[in-house]
Length: 127
Image (cartoon, rainbow, N blue to C red):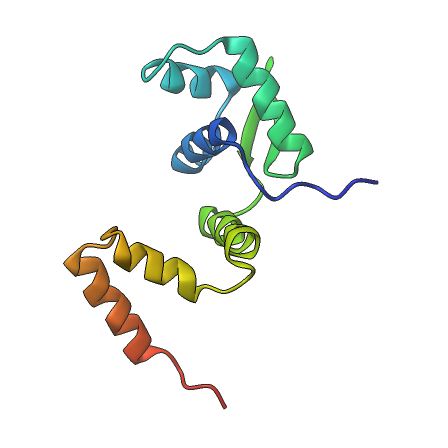
């Protein structure tokens, strides 16, 4: 059996963001929210939510005539997995080149840099 994919496409992540925000959602609710931002077909949203369920990112349960979907995993857990996969694929598992790239490209604000510095200062020392 093929392992469930951890990575999400851009459109899958967009749907997951809606479901994470709402906690639970029907296909109709996700469709209505996405439709406010861009043109999207109801059947496309339904298909993608079924794919997300197959991948293990959503869980569905019947409620009346519709299914209600909820996230199978917390947002932070999924994002951590995506970041880990990205660092593995792009930087061969080393996070330092990612951080250096963010610094070089000035993708971090002063506030973000200060917060990262605090995290480093508060991090437990390795044994």
